[in-house]
Length: 214
Image (cartoon, rainbow, N blue to C red; front, side, top):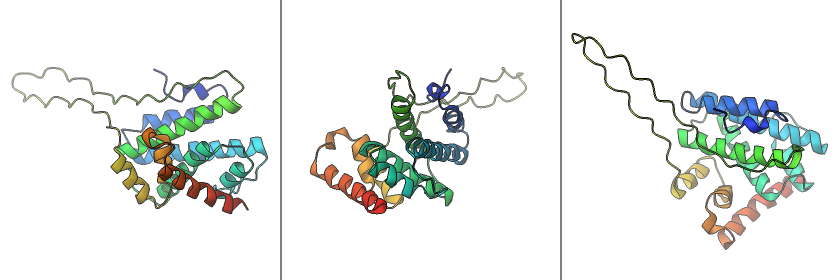
């Protein structure tokens, strides 16, 4: 069954490969999953810099992101998503431990950015489909053992990660430092869109980006 990133195969095969591998390791090895999510972020920024003639500073992606936003190559929503991914990517590089739910959120953020990239730079009529949580594979039941051998316990049914609550996500943002909690409200908590809280948090992130670009 094709994964969530298969739509990138024709135009951005490197993103399709990294997305497929990130999903493959989502349940099996969180550290490897985070590695491929980080590569998605790096490659998206490199692609955008190449398209828009922005200098790429290697591992330091804060400057290029701010420049892309300043030049209106990315809108405020995509800037916030990429900025959050950058923060998590830096945390992963410094050996921060992330949970299954955190990895799943980052996969969803990666998918949002990749769908936007396909819509704006893919040269196709692609329309967003949204993200479907990959199913956890349930081990096949073992053959019935002989009567003289104790039957092994039945495998536990797969459990999908529960959606993060507002409180959990705010704690996650705090863990990674800062006022970028705005991304959570902008992307996931629709009921707060347009409120003064959201406007204030978004303004803080955007002001910071403009200061870096100036």
